[in-house]
Image 1: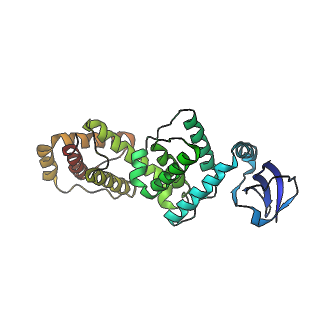
Image 2: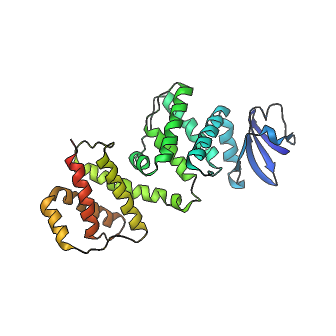
Length: 279
């Protein structure tokens, strides 16, 4: 049994469980209830958030403003995400994602959209989370008769990635994605042609950039071994190497990094392929 500390609405209550203040939800669990009443465990869909004392008022107000149906949608999305990813997600996701979905639907109903500048990076670097985001998009569009943009799938994926923050790989995820995004945007801008982001050449380019970023953060960048190859690339593919050099200058300026020419050579190879297959 769980003791009620405050009824937020008919389906969301503030409770005390094992001496800790938490938010619990379940259809109708708050209806007709008052402080001190007990709730059987089986009536609670999910105790999803331990409330930090200093944030208690803000969280209680926030949850009280969100219709319960959004929590149900979030529950289904998280269940699908945990199934596809094969891991449990941070319980704080129930609040952060529900709040995001509620806001996204409100924006769509008002005809407003918010872009995600890391759309392509999240789509390429976190394909599983992105697919769950697309599934969530379909649920929301059907349930609320709206048309959320495809970029919203990456916004949802963003929350799923963040909810894996206890995993070392994902704790660094956005640091990686930010660098990937900077490199990709620099290349796309420099090429100034339409790039087929569904092509095998773009996929290979993204994969190469991803591994470059991983090498950078693990202090495993390639060492300069063959100056002749670097010179040859400038002779054969000057435009690609010029773009690759812009990337090098960008990284050295923003990250105070020293990027070996060997890395620029292989980046130039992939940029050249992109250029050849762009229109």
